[in-house]
Length: 263
Image 1 (cartoon, rainbow, N blue to C red):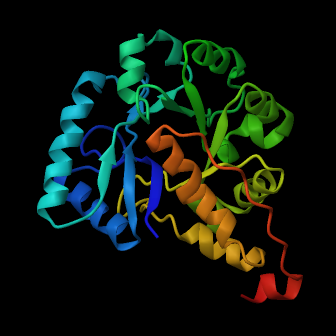
Image 2 (tube, rainbow, N blue to C red):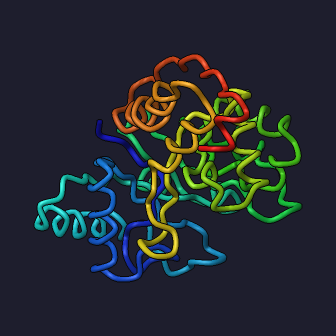
């Protein structure tokens, strides 16, 4: 089944993702191997850390890499995108926002980065303002954001504004530690998880491993495939196509403790 990855730093030489063109093509090989065939190119739009990124150059960079991927015989299709820092969001013009949004013009989604620093200002005014400008919001990695880790209610308020969440695949497998893993599963089980994406940054440092989340699901739940497919095919596929996300399937039943800790 072809999967969709809506958070992937595959464009080379722009941020802390793929460093070279060859790295980016190797990145695409890894995605192709796991049948991740639709990939949003979400370079950081974060002026404090990557001021040299020109939003108006991203489309050309994406098309150049797409040609190289096709020349390698790979089936991966690259889609526009960007990981937008919340502190920069309201400074961008509508045209800039459109260029880093995902989905067709009639239903565009912004991948909005949840702050990774403690004490960051609330995101509610930013999300509300972007929603008033006609944009849908996908919150990137809230399971790693200290504010949301401490306060589920803060995330619930953003969901109440119409935002959806993107949880990181490797958070479920423990790459970011036991606390983040626990929070990721708590968000999932509260119904606060909608999309799983890799947030891949490089084939070596942080590879685009989407299916590790399925392995983690299978250790914790009985028959989790329907939920996993909803989060990696159904919802992200609808975002790319500009369609309403499909209804959430039931939460699978947890396995017994012995099965979970011995698998």
